[in-house]
Length: 523
Image (tube, rainbow, N blue to C red; front, side):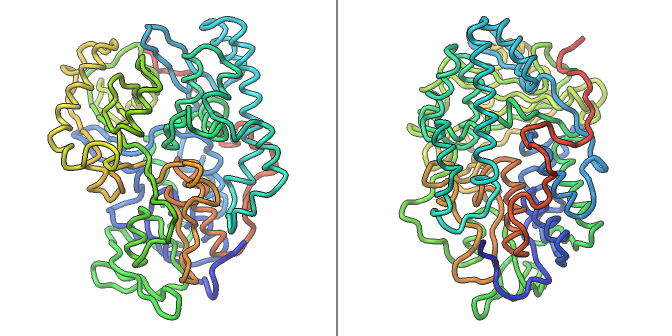
């Protein structure tokens, strides 16, 4: 594994999102002095928090999987996630509602899900689910250590027996077709393939290897941190400070001072100069390239994932049909992905993610009130409407989205809203996200693994990248790994599995949690 050259005693980490905080904790655990500089007033990055009246709103991801990766970062400094955050295991992980009026609860426990599939679609589909679950577990084991949790220096690193194992599992076929080998019910196939959208690719075109995301969502477990998702980066920042990191808030980086192929100091917009031995840039990839003064040459321009419109609504009521996470599928499927990734049209028959964090933490809202987070995927600004267009389009789309929610059974949603915040590609672009998408560079084959933008910077001996735009990619688990991989580039220490407990990672995480029954339904 290639590493940065020269001294690495003092490392400046630019950005206090999940990847930056993960990197900082792993660096601290390896004995480095760390300064974290963050342009915002506190930690979080994409996993931020806004106060909306008396409501506390998470502005980023709402689904937490693979919490052992967070605990691994805490363990680097002799701490644990459980000391800071209480996790609640979600049962069900999701509720799926379909356009034909049917629905099922998606359980990550195998027996519970087999029984639910049997009730929903019959014994043949239940048997198919069991085979699918076994395939997902084997696919995960074949990929995680060799292709996800690893630093690539060359595509030739793919030439390993694990590549043959992945091929034998059908990992280089198409996701939709591979899922269809196990499940014939079109509704069930959606439950196990919609995750391809996280990677920015339609299920019909995504590699079957991306089903590893389905493994995380439907097998490994889904969790909710009390205090909301923002509680995680806040706890990580506290652990970093306790381990000796210097945290600098409202510290916007203006330039990098360079000489003789190294960054010698980080300059802040305030005029302050912070000398350093190495730098880890976890900001948006385009922002990192601006600081570096150039972007690496690529034969094909980077493609970005679809974006999303998010409606945060504080309401005076909720609905019995909603679990903590509810997937509300429209009738269309292939056409939906074509609109999102090719034609650039808004979804004509949208599939939505509705999250109700107050189902498991009522403190996020005033007494008797509720929080609802409604995410509607939409084209990014390269493929679809421009950021400026969303200035007028946003309010109209908000009204159509609420009307659609009411048509799907959330009657009175419009009248229930006490506080709201609408986020569109215009807002994502204003935050610095390229193509108006918070989901960064998509995971096409040419932008995956060793073909994704590397985390080492050519021409500079002591600069490393981390975050969703680089290795290994988009999503909470992967950005946590990204921070660990960046730290390994600096320290030269053991790569994958450095703090990994000696146990099967397909098992549930060894993180003390509350396993309270689901309170997603009104009693």
